[in-house]
Image (cartoon, rainbow, N blue to C red; front, side):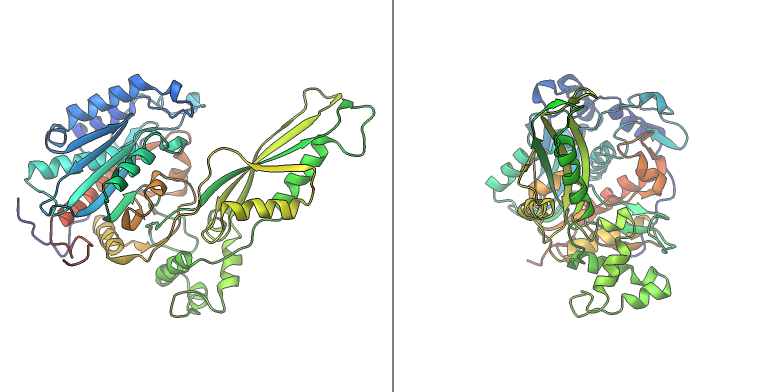
Length: 473
């Protein structure tokens, strides 16, 4: 194994990837691996095409790591020098969401166009760039003779965008059956934002420690139908509309959780003076004693920050009726909740019953649901990720946080001492809107940062256990 030399001041990444590296990602983006909730309609040929591209592009990875497939999901085991010990599980996903506005894109979403600054296409950020970046880093390490001290797993799901039941769930169960316990689990979720955090004039690296739960509640009403010229006192649509309004007008309570209190404490130095002084009112655990309720109310002023201090309520679908002059016999609505740690799926259902106050409105769960992930303290693995992020992009503020959406990592709960959801790419508010939206793209510079971060992470995993964020042995 090549010896690892410690560099106390690693060089920041200032140049983008070359054409060859960019093209490898671009070819992956040309594979139309769109998620579908119906397994019968999985894009098998496109996933096979992507698999062939990965195996051709990264020959050392496929010669030296052990690959196990679960449908189109790919679990690689990179054996370490220390038998039985696992340092990291690195997650990413190969699937992408559909495109419904292709005519609005600057370049067709599955053409994988590369220009002087960007690599364009659906999945450029979410999440094929991370799949390819991890493989680029491992291929480079193998070429240099680097081997991890402890075993590393790479887990690339194929159905993350539709909850991961056929991929991540099966891979996680496979690891549990083998009693895998890693120091670090690293997945998508947080990035480095520039100009997004209000009042902060430095880029902020949000290294998330877990995610909110997820539940969709169906509200349904059945009434006597008839002609609209002779409506009764109660109609299905009117009753349902009142129920939806009550749920939206009476959200679940604000609460400052320990992880968000820790996030704010880490950002304190970069905040303007009035906010910094407010956040100094903390106890030994980092929880605000006096300022907590006020801080939560301030954060609730905007949708992005409100999601960090409340279980959010989002009516998303409403239906009922077939014609303007016919009273419908039934109507229903779907309300999506993203559940804050400390709340639960059961608490969401109880809240809906309490605020709707109408026994004529049926309330039930529809589709998959998940509880909020368990949160643990940041720990040495978090510190390692934060240090590596700062080495790639100097001058950032590194902090913790909660992923408001859902990722594959929720299926791996309990398989690692520390979970981090993070990628060291710098995005503005406009860039964030491109994820799942129009003109998704990644800059050559951001892609270079992503690859170099993973390369440096692998070098750490090849060093002494303490340097890699694990416990001394």
